[in-house]
Length: 332
Image (cartoon, rainbow, N blue to C red; front, side, top):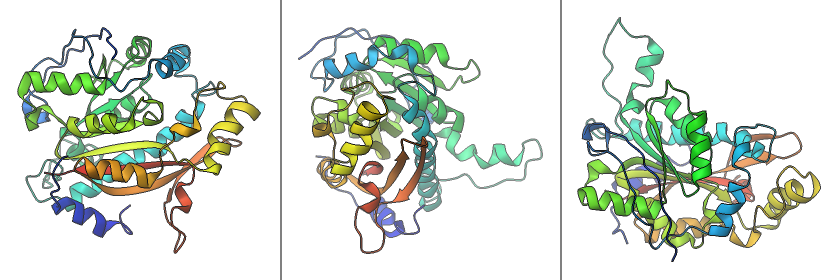
């Protein structure tokens, strides 16, 4: 993945910039495991009231009305199903490249290979990712959270809507004991982590993922701040969203909502879309450097999606004129 972006990743790995009202009840998530897995050995539980949330109640309500349809691949979330494979592939390749660059002993470093006849090569090949933790912020019905858990990561999916969490829990396979859900917000989870451990690094996450969420929040800056605060020092934040361009208006609003009728009208507000450069500036101001940005080339007619470079030769940002995904690394 980093053939074109390797120098950027290496630079981000050593750069150390300074990290820069509604109330609602939230649910409970019980998750106990050792601090060696990246979260303090304690239960992630909460019944406090949310304060200073970036959640937009109107936007949440849009998805509450559709919560029973999250796992219908031909329903209103079908394009999220289509994009899920490329999105998860991007996350995995980001982590794999960080593992390749990381010094031995780093959280992302791959363990030294050992001859072990008791395990298959596929099991050993993914062992490095099984020690990592992730939180999927705005997980909806769990499309990405389940996929990340199947990679072997310990995953916590959070969402502001109880109905979404109920659907995610109902669909979660019983064999995925490394997957948990909680009805909460990013801001509330940050406050909870601070209260329990003073934001100790071992209570935070190796990867913070938020996919097709930022365009639905009340204010992207405090939302991104919460994402960065949930990542451990040196951790990764991955965000996918839509660029604010004429092409994205056609591809992500006009075609699916008004011409094809595959997405309910009013799902997206083009003015809320976030350009890649704007997203990069937000995260840089919060102490997280860009690792990579790629386009998510979605064809609503054939219902296909693939990753593409942001730039094609001298043509900058051609590949990210509509949907895109970016990875950032928090300073150590």
